[in-house]
Structure formats: structure tokens, C-alpha cells
Image 1 (cartoon, rainbow, N blue to C red):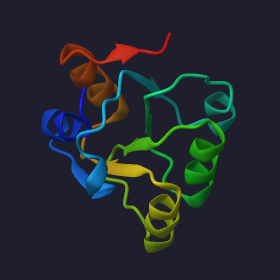
Image 2 (spheres, rainbow, N blue to C red):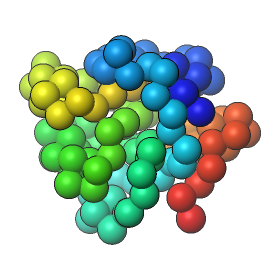
Image 3 (spheres, rainbow, N blue to C red):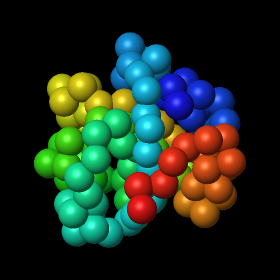
Length: 114
């Protein structure tokens, strides 16, 4: 699924990484526990989280995740956006809960990691 399709399915906003809107994402993983994210080993992965801070960006970087979806109307701070741009990441925000976002993406064809 393309990043722009993820935005469309969830009524989301691509906050940064507009040049990556055509990038394919094949799997998704939902977690607010960054220790769980560090155990993930998958390319082309979408991280779905409600934890909106710099640590989330750093954790994604360490796990080679380049697309993060922030749920529950979480805001991306200017510092988060700047760091994500430096790292070549795409950041998406959406109003849905983590449960709804995961379900909608699954129904649209996104594969779960596990």
C-alpha cells in the first residue's frame, strides 16, 4: 500500500515526507511501547502509535522504520518534523484510535507484522 493510500483510507495528513507518498509499505505494527518496536525486524513497515515525541522518531530510526502513523489526533512537533525530515521519514497523523486505524488498514489490504 502506498503512503498516500494510507492517508486516504484514514483521512490522515502527511505531515512530512510528501516526496515519499508513492513509497510502498507492506506491513504494519501498532504499539505505544518503544521497547516492543525495538524488537521488530521488517522492511517497508508502518509504525502505528499514539506516542508522539522525539523518542518515537529515534526508536523508528534504530528499527529502520521510515513511516510512522500517529493516531488519536496526536500532533507532530516542529522538532519531531525536523528530525524526521533529516532521517528521510514520512510522518502521518490521523484522528482515528489505534484500534480503528489498524482495522481500517487491515481491511484495505495492509498485512500485519505478526
